[in-house]
Length: 135
Image 1 (spheres, rainbow, N blue to C red):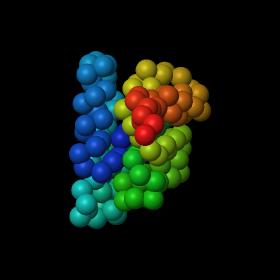
Image 2 (image 1 turned 135 degrees about the vertical axis):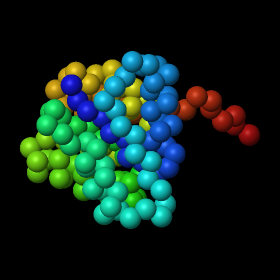
Image 3 (image 1 turned 180 degrees about the vertical axis):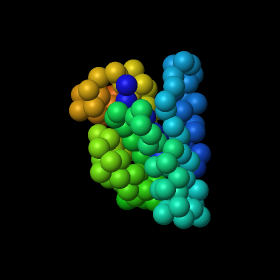
């Protein structure tokens, strides 16, 4: 089964986990990491890597919020280091609740297939719900 990590600006990672647990209350092996604005990226990267890496982990999917921001930069470091340690790891940016729910629902799939389903779940959850009236 794929281990899931959410690395995002504080408090987004924990909030997304709360949403996921509302829908999938028995979910395990999913880790939220709320990145504080004044964090030391090097120190936080090491702490997160140590939390995610162990002898039992087979595959990891990391979800992050804003590409190019500090949480995403930390996530890139961790994904690269996990891959260097022979743990196949995918990293997706732009996380939303639909992506997290898809990650949990399809986490038994192979990592490339899971990654595609998570992207599709994220895209499907973005839509206009009310159209603006013409003036």
